[in-house]
Length: 182
Image (cartoon, rainbow, N blue to C red; front, side):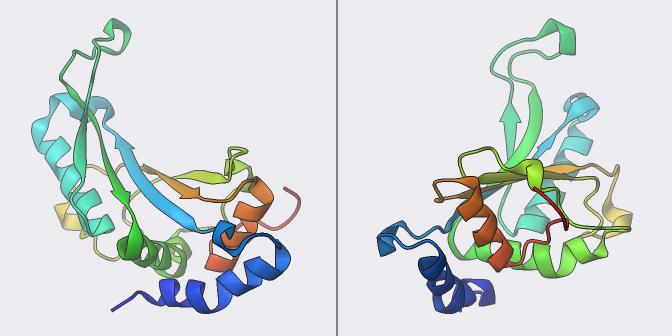
């Protein structure tokens, strides 16, 4: 069973983008992948806390998250080669659309004093990046199971050529942006 956002993309959003940005139909913008990542910080020396972060991100994403291992030692950050320095998960296909639907319609409205995501998160190549302060906004997360709250970075990669097209795609998908100028 396909997610409702994927069905909406195929039926409505794609047609709207083809009208607004006329070009070859195979070049119509779409979301390629979503990457959720968490930097470990002081959790890199505590394996129990690192496992808790990995389990929480896996629960949120609906897919197993992997630990990111340091490739080099950095004395200034007290990091040795082989230490786990973070957790990430890459979502594609139906799981990506299910996560985006859950993020836009359930999780972000639960953020206290939420006024929208900043439009300055675009990188110039059609990708959008933003951070969340804590993981408790997702309904799957049980507060009692959390050892320590942590934030996360979410990167949405699109096939759009420029930021204007990517912005319109994400706007149609339902990502809540702040009102006003870009």
